[in-house]
Image (cartoon, rainbow, N blue to C red; front, side, top):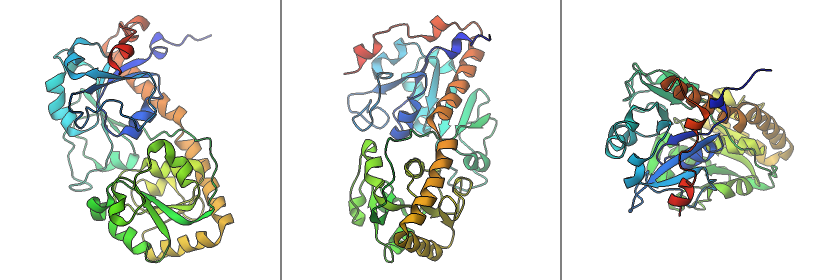
Length: 345
């Protein structure tokens, strides 16, 4: 019988900042302990656990002043400020030599094909969340890999009794054409559709629905519409698919590899055609249920949380082991078991 190395049995200690809370929540499902800094003003990245996501005890708040005193296995960056500024202000010189991963959540925006990523270091691992993003970024000398999203399957079923579509985008009124503001406004002239998300009231939306309540809220809608022209594959899209809610969206970016038009949802670059498909779904609940069920099957197979957490742990464990060839299980475990009690209020 083969023996699993000790490194695969111990939680890996990650230091990161609270960025992209829903992603951080899914990452926390892995065999990891995540340490996030908190300051007195609760500024961006330093808000601590917050109250939006049901984080477990493996997500630990650390006062900024205490960060340099603790031991971690790796550092995870998720935005340019973390990488270019914050690490030099709050990490010790030793901590700055730990295995480093930059998690890039977005595709390039200056130009889709010729934008150089600001991380240009062969000692850093650049992780992209979609193959499209990895394809379009110029990754410089930085080794890159793709870890696709992972979603927890909710214990709820699609209902589709509300004969309307639902759009889930934060701050859409400020984010403009790239996020499909004009498309959303055109579609709702022809199809009954609701918008939820932060500041959605500015567009006569329904306001923000906190992440734990999203599955129950959106499962009653006939379909989910994603009007976004150019961004990463949204977690909200995958969360809808996991519920069996049929998705209608633009045939751009990674979406074209996830949804097959007419089989697991509807995709097109012709907005008028998409409007016709939405009307079709509103009039045919059985079709909506059929497309949603196939989309759910795809999501469960490709974006399940087990595959996601395995991919992350495998990457982090390999980096830690390469950095410390003599790593033992004891070294990977917390040196101070009561850190959570000490720092999490």
